[in-house]
Length: 492
Image (tube, rainbow, N blue to C red; front, side, top):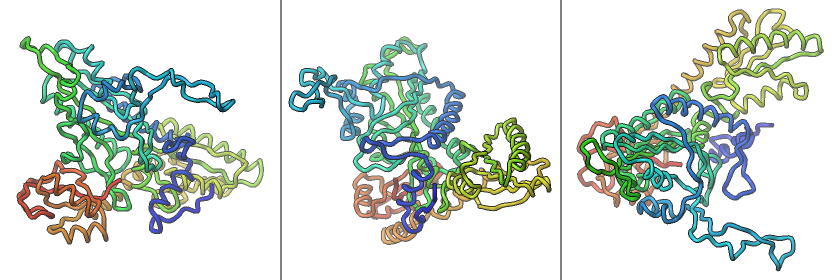
């Protein structure tokens, strides 16, 4: 597992691709555009899942599961949603294979096994879920419905990159139904806040909360709330979205309920989701030219202990201390691994765990035993120190907490230093080209201006930040009156 990574300054994209593979997170599969998530990468996703699942359930949501296939007639019921995803859909047209009479030993699609109606492999599940909710909802007493599902989806991408954009990916998608507009809006904002809390407190990534412009909204949404993060190369990444769907899907699927006044009304809806692209965000926010840097709150292994010895006697003595320390740390809910493999030298182990971003590495040798000390190395700043074994568990606990905070503060400093306010389009292009990051600028609110800026610079409106003060100004591109500033950036 030699590192030999391309440096970020030389080729950031190549560095990322190499790191994902060499750190044993994922690899390309035999299916074009799809990935194999390897055990170490999946362990990170499992930790993300566990924390998000806990947060969802704490706010009253329950998990369920809906079909992978969506009949085309259901998929096209909500026109904007169907139009928005149509070009990315994989479609099942037949249900059987048969031996190919013209090619012995090969198979072909049975021409007699054509489906009466094509099935769309879900790119998102609003259609199949709202066709189901129609059967679940009759009265206000049936509301709210607060459902989440952990699933895979397919969006037929032509240009793929591991974790960031693949034809199939893993995610969670929440779909809720409410009796009132206000309740649905509160749900939408609440879930966006939960995403922000998770990304900041567990991923150690600062985010900006806001709403999308009309052209960047989820297809079929009235409003899309989002959290936007900034990667080390100055590009933005959408880390999560929460959609206020109004009554669009209820009307498309005729989902009505009898309200408290005894009158029929359409249900109000939300949907929200994050995906395995968060692993890509984690990599690109914190990692360095030596490999992954993982925040302790999401690291599959938070502490690794590596013995350094010359003979069996030394190994046994070190193992006794190491195993005792593992037990002490496990009692503190710290995941700890004692790497006692005799097939790798200590130096190779050091390189492996540095590449895989383990937050703390402890080395124990004969001299350490004699001095009742250990060597502790931090992955975030590559510092090493000799510390006494006494109270080592407390020191490790404090160090992990400090690493978590330090990673967030480092990322926040970078992000804050890469938010630039500009007044004219020449300055806009100069900052985008030479500095990158977010650009705060006035926008006249038209799709035409937004599209023209995108065509000329590849920058898009990432969000209209929730905490921006609405002040009138002049659009950075058109010179027309503007009511507020927005954040532009090039993005993944």
